[in-house]
Image (cartoon, rainbow, N blue to C red; front, top):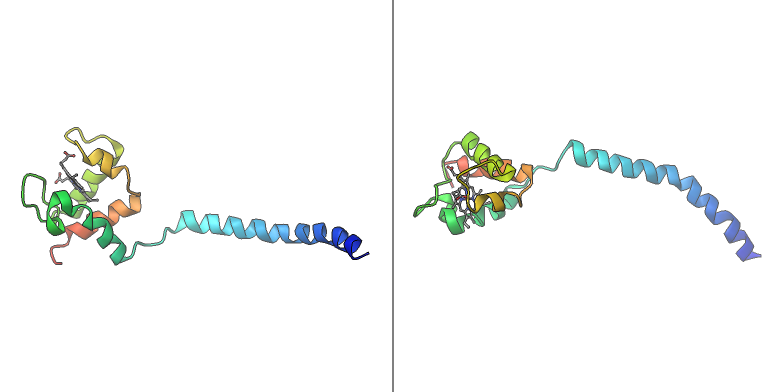
Length: 118
Ligand code: HEC
């Protein structure tokens, strides 16, 4: 008897919950595309640290690789987007590197390095 009770009730419970589950999932998908979570400063610092190997400590060049620190944000953004899109004709390594970053991360990196201080 308890077995018969359970098998007749369980599917109805799942059916009753289905619209709730579907709505919750749709809400989350919507939230994810409409408002990407802003990157935290410490996350940008971690991303930017990987650039130091080539662009110098804190983006201050010590050799032939371009300086990033204090360069205009619009210029950095335009260059990074061109690298990612594969349209920068002069690029060697940066095309491959830039493809690994989300658009939001690229924007955050351009803003980060454009600031003189730090
Ligand atoms: C392996 C070495 C290397 C690393 C790591 C590296 N870069 Fe570069 N970067 C270069 C080289 C070399 C160039 C010159 C263009 C080219 O050859 O691809 C360059 C060019 C650039 C430029 C264009 C500068 C200008 O004024 O035209 C920007 C912006 C840039 N890199 C940003 C970054 C950022 C941001 C990171 C970290 C996420 C990074 N790079 C990591 C080697 C590197």
